[in-house]
Image (tube, rainbow, N blue to C red):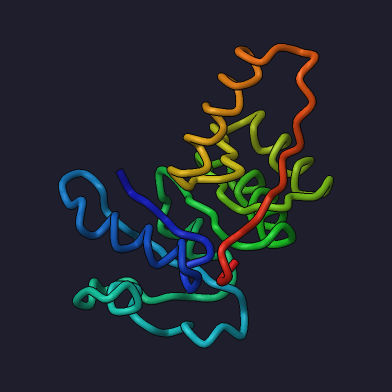
Length: 161
């Protein structure tokens, strides 16, 4: 599987690069993109992830995502960048897209819906194992406590979010 990453300079981008490079086998990282003006442009993405150089250099713009013909693009960027990415992928015949970007607005959702007509799109609002366990626990608590139980949920992020 040929993998491309959009948002390569962020914490999640680097974690995905590390996982992809360590996975080996059929997973091959073919492109890494970050925002124009990013300090990581031109750097080897393997080195950014704390591994040896892998020969994939971080670029700006979306051309690398189409010229390298990835099977799937993983996006951890920003809502505006996700919208632009979805439109660009749709304009080039579509590519499978996994989105981990949070705070998507109406424009991003509309662009993702349009891409979803020609390609597989998965939007995961939170990829944290802990948060996904909490989703399950909240559903179970709701079932056990019933509709008359009054509860409040407060969202909090780690200090680096």
